[in-house]
Amino acid sequence: MAPNSEKPATDRRQVSFPHLEYPVTREEEPRTPQQWLKGKRLQDGAQDLWRIHDSLYDLTSFVDVHPGGTQWITVTKGTDITEAFETHHLKGLAEEQLPKYFVRKTDAPRNSPFTFVEDGFYKTLKLKVAEKIKEIPKNVRKRSDFVTDNLLAAFVAVSSLSCWMMNRNIWVGLALIPASGYLLSSLVTCSHNYFHRRDNWRMYIFNLIGSSYSDWRISHAMSHHLHTNTAQDIELSVLEPFLLFLPYRTKSLFEQLAALYWPVIYSVALVVQLIKEVICCAVNVEGKQLTLANAIPFLVPTWMWYFGGLPLHWTLAVWVSTLTFASFFFVMFGLTAGHHAHENFFEGDKPRAEYVDWGLHQLDTVVERIDYAGNHFKSLTRFGDHYLHHLFPTLDHAELKYLYPILYEHCSKYEEQLRTTTFYKALISHCKQLIRNTPHDFTEKNRK
Figure 1 (cartoon, rainbow, N blue to C red):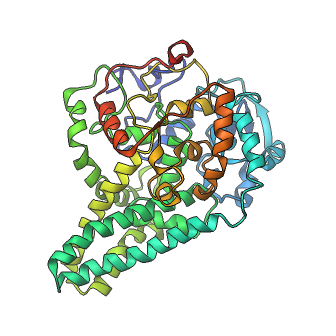
Figure 2 (figure 1 turned 60 degrees about the vertical axis):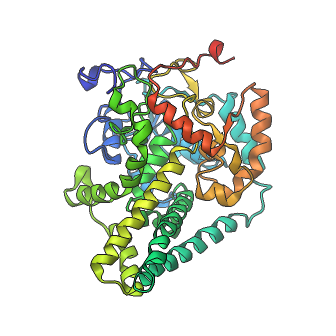
């Protein structure tokens, strides 16, 4: 439980950034992306418009012509989109168009600790990357498309085969279930590469695992990516109280014991998420509605039953088992991707400064798994190349490897270090973070 949680939500402050308001809906159940947006509308001072830095814009007429699709604009109305605007546009075209939608300046301070100074770490790196991507081969994204499409075909085949084999050799059928779950996890992780970008058909693959790509655009792309490991990171709050990664001194023994029982939580997470998604849509939580996209997860047991030849009830059992294995792999690779290490910054730690360059904050919240370096398949299917993916989320994973020389050179110029680990060390480190209840000090004098 967060310190001062007994205070009214409007009186609470963030621990790491006490000059900022605490997210008013952070502890409200069922902790949906829609609730997170509701809280931002209450606190961002955007006045039913869109806030970028200290200006308000009316993007209503831009919704239907936004190159990335309508959702990015429609759901963020009434919020501060500064971080999204800065990190999702690399070519400078958005900055040229923005003045047409200007309404007025605002004196209200931003409820964010992040800065984007023109000569700062992130903005200068962004300029270098914008030039470099012009040299990247034009067809390089097809490598990710090839991997994703073949994983989809493999999953369709193996998931159906697991049911088909149950009638012929039950041990082979049982052995195919974890293999099918691993394929589903890898496939859905690949699709995460696509929902960060403009609308495309591959983003719908994400729904096969029981989640919603449109919700994850909010909870993952808009919350976690832009407010990593802060009080505004909804991906931390939805795991509580079973997994409390924040280093609060009030962390209970039960919460610290998660360092032992995390495999159970990881295995059931996506099954619970599927149930939660259906219920929230059915009862219209904060405007959520059932759509055709909600039927996508149920395509999996449908083709397993049609091609596998098992009775429906046994097919459903195999499907749930497959989803359980997929959940374990997906969450495990996701939570060892770089953010949950015990040496990283989290809400509750002392930050570099009261206001922090957004790019430098990303360096404080990532430890890169070096054993995935240079391997496109591992990077794409296990959330690899995490530094660059967070700094430039709209780029394809196949493009990221071309940017490392620039990132290394830039970090050297600013006397910053890219911290690295291995998958197995990251697994141990994330257990240590579940135990940690002593805040770190990230101020300049303590970092050096």
